Every structure is written in C-alpha cells, then in structure tokens.
Length: 75
Image (cartoon, rainbow, N blue to C red):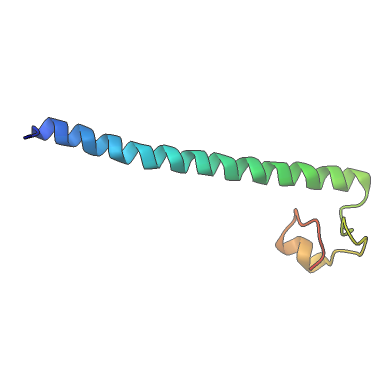
C-alpha cells in the first residue's frame, strides 16, 4: 500500500503527539508531587515540627533542609 506524502506526515505527527502527551502527563504528575511536598512542609512548619524527623523525632540538619526544603527525614 502506497501512502501519499500527506498521509506520511499525518502518521508521523500522530506518532510524535503520543509521546508528547505521555511526557506532559509525567510532568504534571511530578509537579503535583512537588506541590504536595511543599504543602506538607508548610503544614509541618506551622505545626512547629519542620526541623524534626517525622519517624525518629531526631533533628533534621540545616544542611539537609537547605539541600531539600521538603525533606521529612534526617539522613
């Protein structure tokens, strides 16, 4: 079956659109996780336990929070 140049371009565009849509969905998922982390960090700040490991209760070093402001555990 011979395809016209227009059909080839349409097929190529459709093939490119699918990975782009998947990438957009992955980006949106990452952004939502980042936002959830920030919201949790703000809640911990309001509660006064931002600087405390949420499992062990040990302090989270400033260096850790500087490197990752949404860290919830001490290294």
